[in-house]
Length: 88
Image (cartoon, rainbow, N blue to C red):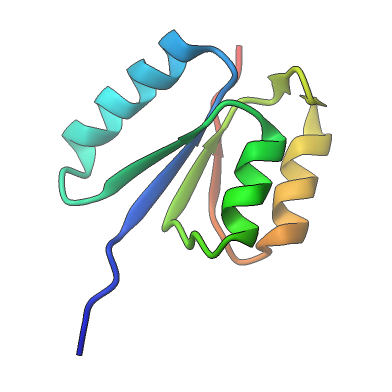
């Protein structure tokens, strides 16, 4: 039986913040594949395409999302998926 690769989805529109979050995630969870999305739309597309991350980190303020709307939208796509909000 094949095992599915565990992954984390980092959603942030700022490339430097995404890189910093990925670096921290590599230290905390070295066995996880790190997937990134630069927008809420890109994250939703990845989920619809079958990505099943163990966790999402989410910036609340992006070009296509502002405030809790992004969180609510992701939870509508994947209600059981844990989301950590990382936002200034």
